[in-house]
Image (tube, rainbow, N blue to C red; front, side, top):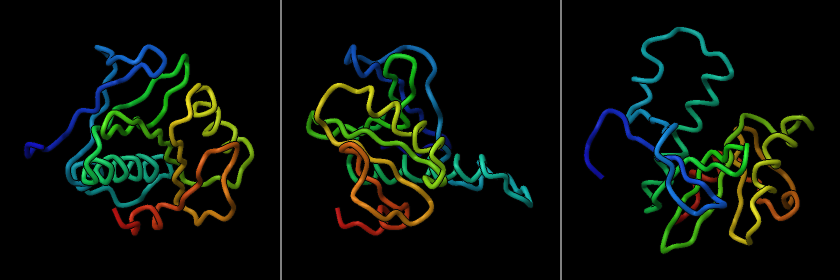
Amino acid sequence: MESQLFYRANRYDIKGKRQLETKHKYYAADLVFHNNAQISFRSNEIAQMMENLVYFELCRRGYRVYVGQCDKYEVDFVAEKHGQPHYWQVTMRLNDPTVMERETRALLAIDDNFPKTISSMAPVFGDGVKGIELVGLKDFLMQEI
């Protein structure tokens, strides 16, 4: 990976199994570029920083990372290693049923048996939802690779 201020994640059509030419997302190499000396944080800014952090952690672990598109739903990340995808959603909390439904909807629309994970800021308890692994952000970052 070359040294840059911002890194582009290409959009990937999960069902069509191809990269798309538009709507790429960019992630800051250093969160100071994202925050740019703001004093207070809004929850959506924290969620964006979490997404930025997960993007770089997946890259550090050797994945090629895309932003996924499955029909009308966006999947935060399609992390591919050795030809095998792993689908990721990143969210602040999962304790609200509306949030849980929103985050699982895109992953459940993917019709394959590759791993699917939702990472949340709050600690996660339980075994997952319909085959989707739930992991706290801290636990994800502390995992051995």
